Length: 287
Image 1 (spheres, rainbow, N blue to C red):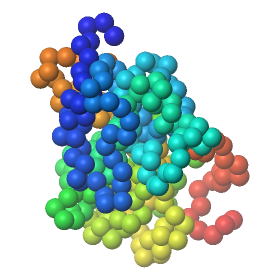
Image 2 (tube, rainbow, N blue to C red; image 1 turned 90 degrees about the horizontal axis):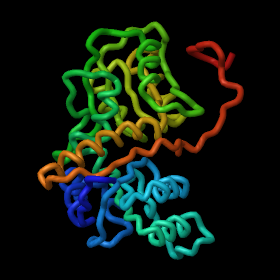
Image 3 (cartoon, helix red, strand yellow; image 1 turned 30 degrees about the vertical axis):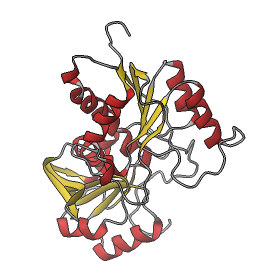
Image 4 (cartoon, rainbow, N blue to C red; image 1 turned 90 degrees about the vertical axis):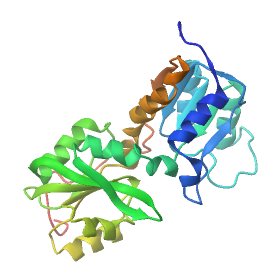
């Protein structure tokens, strides 16, 4: 960490909140500073999607002062932080090791640049704009490929820039169908189907697509567009970490200092292996 002049946590938090204003988060969300003393010095910032015990341990081993995650640690009511629970053990590990935790969740989803911008960039989209605007806030992104690709080519190219997971990428649609206009929502996005259809997108990239909404969407499309790509929740949001790092460093550049940073590469996608997946493409039935 030679050459790095620590900044007070308060200054780093202020920069993060300029980038990802807390008031833009969904009402149910829990964003912002979770642990840490605003006066404590920060020299190394660790970026991750999930504040799991393994991620916190990696941050500790790296001597990180601040862990910035996309997903909240304490989203629902917690009545004990005893180490007998994973949540309690996480809180204890953060405090004992003097690691501050900051969460940018739905406020990072709607930021510009934010989570969906990172996914749009991974899809190599141009002429990008909001997929939907609700109450003056843009959700998701929609844009175009530089030239049309088959659905299979598009999914294969996306797979080369996404981090690898056990489940890979799931695709609904004909492998040889040409796609040009693409809509994206990082993380869970099966409540944006109406906006996707209205956007004229040929393919929709998101995650956590459930059976019934997908089946209904494909039935409504009568086999046509929009085709669907489930890129995986963790994988589709991991892409944002590099953006968050570069934007934070840019926001702090006028302080005449450059913090050390690290992007977590631990796979916190919960699935470990798949058995019985189809080995050939099939557009209908179970055969």
